[in-house]
Length: 287
Image (cartoon, rainbow, N blue to C red):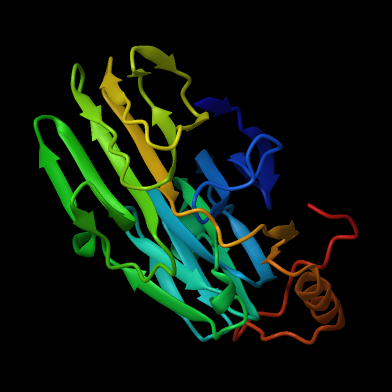
């Protein structure tokens, strides 16, 4: 078991904490990227605005605790995403999308808080077609008992199965615990990690630092205890089917696929989001 302290960054004006990827750990199950979009208050006339940008070789999953995001992509999807809902986009060989504060909230002012993660696609799906699906909160299974609520955002665990169409064995659970409750974390998946969003928690009696990623040992079944009302997510799954390269918004098992994607985006040879003109240009450096 070890702890990853996230680095603070800013994505188009939205402050985030990013524990994955890190030098200590490149992936946990299929998860190769983890952004905690920090609680942010946007004044009237302001909001999050992540312009058109590309992806290959991954799925993005956006899950909000507060606020609202509008998702648009080159498949023609145009979806408002609310707290407790899942916005799932699989890139395949080439997709572009935007994420922004909806116009009404942009004009009135709003708050935003949530998570966005990337899951590397299995090699067999890296160059397949793109896909988008939206999953309302009511469709996600929940276990609520003895002061502990577990919602399965994606994948399987705790006798729950999410409808989100993951491409490999996955665990992504939201956990809310009342003070003085305990939860055994089962060894249902080979790789697992815990991220505490808020509250005081102990893992096998040792304090857990909030807003850090605790990577669990394979096969261990530690006990999670809440010293206060607490909120966390548990991620994991089967190990990736080989190493992955990450460069900017691209993930691939073959570096040549990343080189091709960079060249295509730079040349403007890429699917576009309907109605969108502005885009994020290819950075000269690497992630």
